[in-house]
Image 1 (tube, helix red, strand yellow):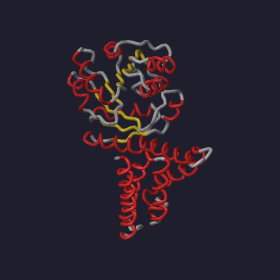
Image 2 (cartoon, one colour):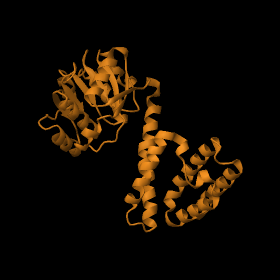
Image 3 (spheres, helix red, strand yellow):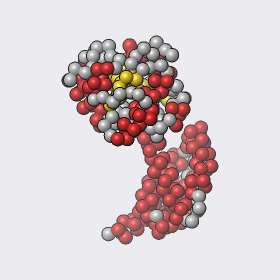
Image 4 (cartoon, helix red, strand yellow):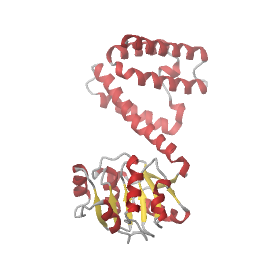
Length: 300
């Protein structure tokens, strides 16, 4: 238990992230004094992960807490901070922390203007909003942005959450968040589409078929980057790619745009590092163009 343990915590936005982080901080010795959540799901989540913590209006939560955790959606955050500041619910010396990946400290300017200590603290993790997430926080990286006076406090909070800090400059928050979203969110779409193709092909267990392949591919990509690329693109197998495009068009046309887009991106990277010769690349591009054109004509 660190020197921040005496800080009472209030949570505005008892979503998947807010309920889990505050439950973990509670386990580390922080009293969680109040929670604000509008939806039935938020209230149920608070009851499950934060039993006994009263539900209050956002302004009351802010007034009751030494450390205010703002875990509302990105687009709502500026308005929430401004309304709390304008209502006098924030005060000098109070710690105000948001968990947005996109936003840095600028969005907390109204809180800083009244003398609050402000921190941007984003967990690089996907959440279910259940007890399962509590253990997943161990070793999780948190993207931090804070002023010099708050850096130690921010790192201590991350340690109490069981995580590891990485410092993100204010002007790079959106790019940092884009990297995480591109990797995690689009991975879900990619895997779901791949399972759909296998299901259409008659595979009885698409997830089980993909799991060992994807586990290995992810490990290799994280360890070796582009050098981990395998498959028909890097081999220059134009006939295989044409066959893929034809069968996807016939059986799962909704997947064709993402297949083509990712094939182009993969080809660009393979050409750059010299594994695909320009003449092969030209043939692959032509195949991708023809498939896209064919689908476009059929849709007219």
